[in-house]
Each structure stands twice: as structure tokens, then as C-alpha cells.
Amino acid sequence: MVSGQVSHELQVDVSASQAWHLYGTLALARFVEHTLTDVIDKIEVEQGDGELGTILEVTFAPGLRGPGWHKEKFTMVDNEKQVKEVHVIEDGYLE
Image 1 (cartoon, rainbow, N blue to C red):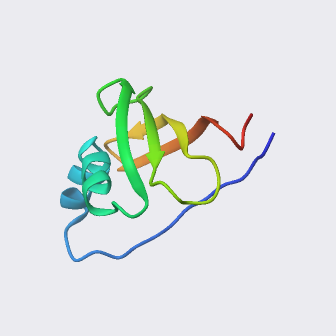
Image 2 (cartoon, rainbow, N blue to C red):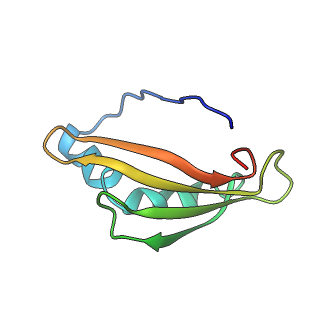
Image 3 (cartoon, helix red, strand yellow):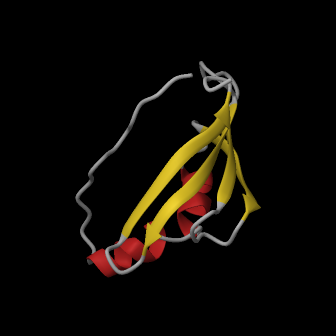
């Protein structure tokens, strides 16, 4: 089993509440799916509504190295602190 962590910080020119309106909801999945078409082929909601326990299946664009997909689960969504944690729960690397 592979274990690791990825995090990224990015400064944006909007308020924290405006950024959270995108990042803290399923709107981020739709945004990524439509803007990063060279990396993401599609994102499907398998379970949930963007809150804790939501599971997404992410299919990567054809031709990219590595597994062609993964499933990720929202393991923490704290709207007050504006923090979200997502774990990959299934893919070729984990199997």
C-alpha cells in the first residue's frame, strides 16, 4: 500500500468566504472538470452532496501516466474553519 500526502497553498484575489464557496462545495469538481481538460476527463459524484462522506470518481485524461482514475472521499468538511480533507480510497496505486 502506498502512503503519502499532498497539499498546496495558493493565494487568490478573493475573500476567504468567496473561495470557500467554490472550494468547499461540489462546484470545485465541476470547475476542475471544465477547466483542466488536459488532465481530467470527468468527475462523477458516486455518493453525497459535497459534505462529509462524499465520494467522487475522477477519471484522468487519456494518455497520462499512472492509473487512469481514482476515487476520493471527503473525510473532513469544516465550513466554520473552511477546511476540507480528501483521501484517495481506491485506484491503481492503492491496489
